[in-house]
Length: 200
Length: 211
Image (cartoon, rainbow over all chains, first blue to last red; front, side, top):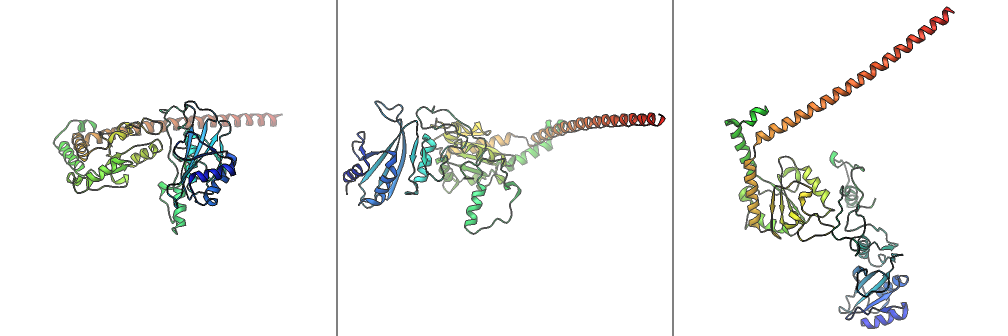
């Protein structure tokens, strides 16, 4: 099954539109409401099963020449191992007022961190995401740096580092280790550290 | 003690020489490698260039046992408090080498996430240029650091430390004295009030009984 046929299926089922900017590949613009179903169809329904999510990218069209429509977009790239040359991209347009996209982290495990990255850099909220926190920037960061209206040289200091010991201990306990004794220096002091990238 | 140490004599100079000789020839680095400069450091450390020729053979992966903090690579704002904490964990005497363009000045990462030079966080003794630096450049920096250490005076530093400590102790004692005095004054005032009240009560009682 070629990419064109898959696009025809997407057009028929989910009302996808062809992205004119993509002259060489196949990019289907779907609405946010149909996104989860479309991804499910690409993963399980089609003959060529797209078992690989290559990337999720956020796009900010603020300074893009001759652009009309919503300011943001989220682009999903899919690949299949069965037919290496077949690639399909999905694109969801996101308006500045809503900033909401349904998550696909229940379908692809690696979408979890991709969506966290897009949330971190663009501020697009993925609804239903199990753990939506900043991935690359620190907790005290204000704003979303890959937006075009963020000044690129604006620097923000972090005061303390993350408190990683509880998660480490949890991981070790899962492996069968046991905390017998802690030295005084690593004794947990909740006031001293931020929760940061570790889920409380 | 301060005056004696400031004037060099045969004992202090020979002690300085001995201490500095020991320090220069056993600089144990702590490699804080975050990028490609760390790879260059590895090649400096092993067979071909062999950093152990100048006595730095032990790469210690704990800040408590190392003398030189070698920052090799890009430091982001998320990484900055960790670097500072590691520097604070190192025991005195400690030195810092900033290796490569990123550690010196942020390099070409002129953006929201990269610290423009680690000297915004910790004091640096020697800077090495290059992207990444050559092992020869790293050796040059180590020789510079050795020269710098040879110029240091152990006795002088010691005397300064003792002076600082004395001043601190004096200040603390003065503070404690002032506090104790205040406390005593308060107590005295309280006691006075108490006595005055008692007296008044007694007078009232006496008057009552008289009546």
